[in-house]
Image (cartoon, rainbow, N blue to C red):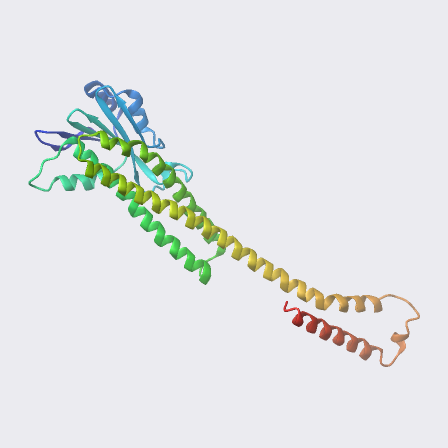
Length: 299
């Protein structure tokens, strides 16, 4: 869509390009001197966050945490959307392909009366809101993992479905960690902008907190998957143990049955009037001995 002026005063102007066409990209190159390579980075749905300086402008490629069902599960666009921010003199230009909650939130903040903002301050607000989007996602994932723990221990869901969902969570967390690791490239550059040291430090502190949350999530989901597999193995081992114990009971009985099932003419027990009772008694004694042995061994 064509550019939209989201904020303007005597100090700065904020222009937004949502889902830009080729003509829009050409306008950005012609009117603001933005290199086509930088615009290609913004339009790449899976480009990692980055920071670049190009002559008179600074380029921040941010990524906002979102849930996407239209992208492959192994790509970073599955958990985030790109948001390109260009700082050109007193102008702030944002370029993105889909709706951005961060832009909407910051725009609402700027509508508060009684204060004017510079382009660097608007950029800072966008950066803070991007970090907050991952903070909100981390809290959501914490709650989801706790729910999965309850289901695993209380056995409220099918195990195959649980394992599939755990691996999906692991993939989401891993992709988010990969994105956040690259955030440091542009977060450290805020200390070079015309901003107070306190604000730049506060942004960095928020980033460190969110990064720590996702590292903890990554450790927690890995441990949970290992625990899930251990419980599944324990259940399989228990089944094998029960089968082995039953085999202990029937092995000597099968031996006796096989012995007297042989077609020999001279087997004294077959002609004895007490042969049948004797064999059953022997079987019962063997079963009793096996039971006592298993009981004492606490199997």
